[in-house]
Image (cartoon, rainbow, N blue to C red; front, side):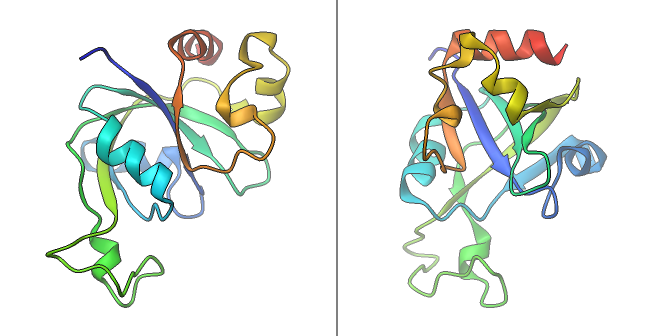
Length: 154
């Protein structure tokens, strides 16, 4: 299967790219996705080795904070079963989980690409992230967009 590319949004107050770099194995579990389309991208589309643009959202300066890769197969997100978690889903059971997690490993930090800069490049004009009303926390990235952004990050 050919390598695919993704953009995954994280609130840096929850987990930042620097947090992932500082974690054991520079790896984190991607949890808390509660949108069915984003869940389906994780569950059905992502594979070990796929590239990830790690995006900081809901912060003063949103943007791409680093490059990561998928390092596990999808699995049930444990937060859906935890009543103390803000991501708890009372309809989910271990026998019939509703939400999916996946492990992501930091690969390269490079320079921070803020949203304003991303919007300034005509090469990215069709990127899903930049579409009006785009709010998904997980979305595919086209190979040409990936290559262009990786060059910008350095």
